[in-house]
Length: 583
Image 1 (cartoon, helix red, strand yellow):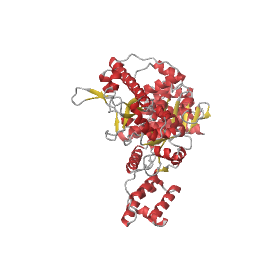
Image 2: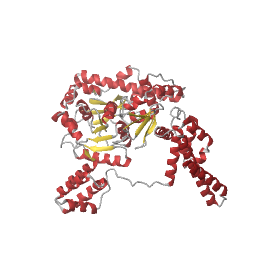
Image 3: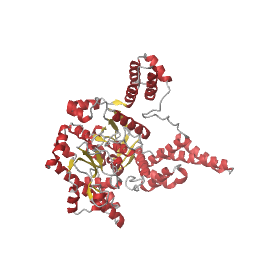
Image 4: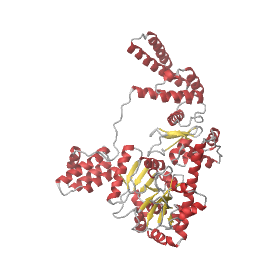
């Protein structure tokens, strides 16, 4: 990624309308002269805990802790690195970026990457032409039509066909000036075992371009038409450019719809994604037939706060759902619900046989994870034997216990009671005493009790927010204080030093790469918008911090056997001042 000048970065910051940028992801309302609030686009919530400062162009969510500046927002919501976010925002704002002088090796790597991307884009367009214009692609067109897929939707996803000849892409790319090494690096060609001949890697297959969230083709998924042509699906090999475990198919086209809907539909296959978009459900993506990875979960989270797991109802599909839920439970990154498809049908089958409304009804009827786990536990058990019913109880008990009561828990108890032919009272007691398997779903960790260190850190953050709410008095206070002695953690000390120099416009000079500092500064700016501009409150909070510092110093002196009389006298003076101000 090229390095751009700081001046370019600041021109982009000035040009972007931050309220408009965030408003495309969540509805905002004015909550003050320098504050707007809305539902957080990074996690599911019903009461707004998310706020932005449209002037400083900072955001913070008090629910999930997400926060940063406009570049962070673009990175998190659109799956970009910093350079990519800068480029995207610059394009939208009509700002021309200026590059810094590059190291020759970096320039060479960037140049190679850009050539490979251009080669892949060219090849994807070629495959599209072959699909719609070549006689040898008639079987592919017939197969796609049988799946109910129309040309307009297929063109939108740039679906194509690779000709059966051994060197069609190789020869055409050479004529366009691309070398053999570039073709291999892009995953488009392979060498024969004897090393003497190079040939096209993909031949006689339906081609699905695999793009990143910016729509740039990084590789291909290729489906065979001939049953004897194995494997059925052949992907671009892993390379410096292509990492299948980082991508979800269709993310570039689903992004806007998923943000608006607040959900993303995760299916298994390429044609399922296309069929759902064609049916008016454009927030669909797929994991390309493999188990979800943490990087793919991150990609899903950037699309929407909730994922509907819409996997095939066969054993493999339901196992995939179970593994996905386990991964989500470990990472805690996404809200999820499970779609129960009719037996023997995938989403494309449902759309083709029953229509778009039927598919939408299935999605709207997605069940909570706990219900899915209970139903799956009951389906797997032999309910005709006492031992099988005991195993069912052990399997479903954790899911019901995690709910901690409520309407859903009562419904699931009734479901289990009916399937096991027990009364509800018997079922509740059996579930309570059943030995439990390890839970597959999201466990609720016990809440950690707040410690004195937590309370001290909260006081320090509140003081810094107050410094921003009362900027003149805040600058003076920070200039007079021993910041390294007063503040208790490295991050808060860094924030204090930063605000001492940048309190007037704290969002405009954040150092690149300091994400933790950017999140904290964003939080402080948003909190400041909720505080009254009270110099008296600022002075009182400063005295409270000074008292905490003296308490720590006295404790340290006593522990080491050093005299602490002068510290105690100073502490008493501070206490008297606090009492005087409280009168």
